[in-house]
Length: 424
Figure 1 (spheres, rainbow, N blue to C red):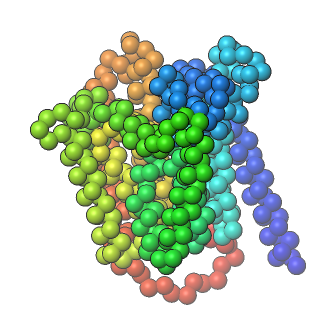
Figure 2 (cartoon, one colour; figure 1 turned 180 degrees about the vertical axis):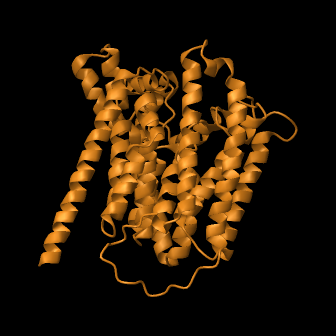
Figure 3 (cartoon, one colour; figure 1 turned 120 degrees about the vertical axis):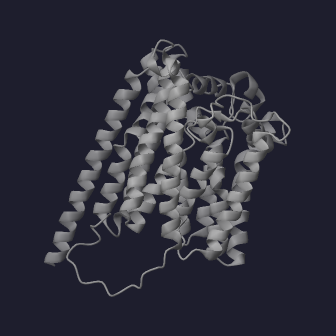
């Protein structure tokens, strides 16, 4: 009875701490988000909101006029935002614009922190608090949602819960969630090879096929109303294929191998053998490498493989934007906490820093032509691209070492009063 009471008190303590963390993180983000006026991308979101007020399911018939290049899921959230503009008018105070446009990114960011806590809560509430804190008070996540107003944390949240469902042997739920994530942001689809390989290896063929069917039905259920509304039966292909083809450049401010050679905003489809073709060959090689890891590795981890695969695409695939590396953060953080490896935690710190800088440098360069970021933009991009490639090599070596090293024999664990409190 005493142990049970102690456990309840301890559980309440963790819950109270989590609540305070979530409240403080949300207040911090909204204070920054409202106070920092950023027209880059957020005013495009406003155009979408105002376009949605004329109709939800026919919005893609007006896609070119409002520069709409997102899949449908986020549009449902923006339609809710549209009710505020219906009530107060389109020309609200700039602070109100920032609040409305950054509302869902900030909420998604905070919920992602909550989700990380819930993933670990049952086995170790302390680890859950560490996971939530590392997300909620990470400068790069704060910058992404509060300064920029971007939706990358929503993408991270969707991928997190879909892969957790896969780890918990819930293939149909995992496939449904992964389909929804792919309709939230295009970049989620980069994780498809990892998801499908794990689904195929982990479950029987019948479960694999049922999962694919669930995903297909989910996509159809979301897209069909938009197809009918826009009068375009090929809308699915237009959204994903044309969206990717809108930016045919080697790199779009991304710190990767193309950034080293000063190829920022340089077209990737020129020449006898274009860099885009070469990058697609490298993607194919990466997929073959992923399959090889599943066949030959001593260990298997969706978190390590998801991190390694996406980080590789970011480094070698053309048409990468500055924020496309952001999503690997949730995978390397999960790898660090699930596998209790300090080396993964150090990679998480390094990538947090480089993704923060990769967001900060272009944004501040855009804000002022007289700033040091604009004056020395080329040099900054080349320098940090070199550093990021070095970080990629180090983190890749850490990931491959974990996957291929001999798995130690498990000896009976000594009894302990603490329940998995050693998070790292």
